[in-house]
Image (cartoon, rainbow, N blue to C red; front, side):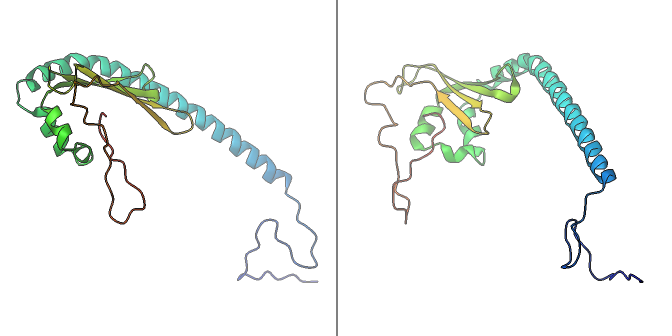
Length: 189
């Protein structure tokens, strides 16, 4: 009996015809798949080690950058409304500053970003303000913590507003066509 293969049809692994016995997975194929998995596991270990080394280098250079940031910050403080201008010019952050925030940002004198000990787990932003008519605080912080399940937990300083100056009260806007009010996203409130 002569068998001719139909070159127009490709048989998928595990696919069988009506009168055929189920195909058995070849022992060599199983061995190849196991070897491939071992190599993949080895590659993952190398990638994890590389990530750890990159973090070490980032942390080292963050320390080296600190005095340079300090000198830069000293110059920035002599430029009127620097931080307000910088935030308003940023394509994403500019939309987070409402008119009242912009008035407050005129009192922002410096901004510090500090990574957690493990850079992968988050960072803290400290907004340093000169005395202002809005709140008692001179420092407001916002901490971003990256959780294992891929979410971010955001916590911030509870602002000690001066009497009658709490701009966070009642901040919501109607979105045209929306069924419920859309709460405005704010940078530090």
